[in-house]
Length: 287
Image 1 (cartoon, rainbow, N blue to C red):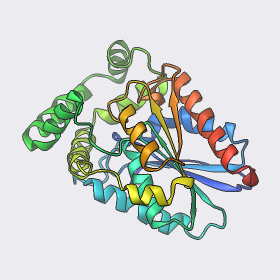
Image 2: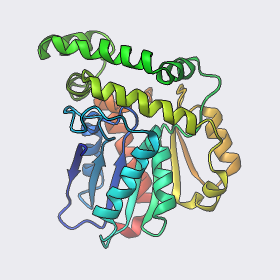
Image 3: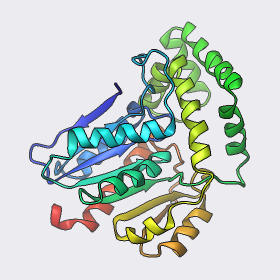
Image 4: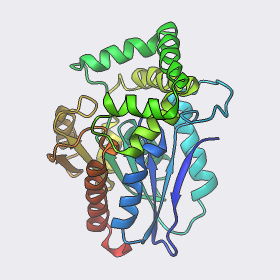
């Protein structure tokens, strides 16, 4: 079981399937998904599927899920829920969700007509101190468990106090949506353990180069949005994609939003507008 958000169009001409990053909590993206639906003019159903056990309730009884298991979960979802639909699928992924979206494109190339990666995390950034620290934390079961326990201990605070703490610290510029998602989901021990366990196996997998052959073969179906100062999707990756797969649609966001665009109303709206414009420009025949 996992959490989903779905906005159904009455008579959709295509489906947008959104894959979040890590943490893979779909409620972080509520403002973005609602804006995207509006900008697409009700022509598309928008579905977001969260990462397993990045949830407010521990439905999986503390089980830890690897990066590959999270990918397989999305593959199974498409097979069960979307493979029989008559209209095309457009994939939109954020951060590590961009990598997962590419894996889904490999499996469902006949069904998926476009794949958009937002602030994509496709390979490790050896220059990033933050990534190195996160990698060391995630690689240690003891450190991961300790960090998860300390964060989960914030559950002792009442919701109002937790919201105040978040909004006065890491979430000073965040929307109510993001503050609420943090307080309901990230204070859960099972969620933080799964966030870090997924990161551990992500870092192992992404030590390799992206699959340039696949990206070259499918570059007409690919689009990526990068940020100015984003260690997950650095501009050297932008440059490398432009060399390796030059017909990929590449953009740089220069409006001052961040990798965590979904945590602000302005970031959610700007990125939703950008994604809608990409889709409309590429597939005007679907409108």
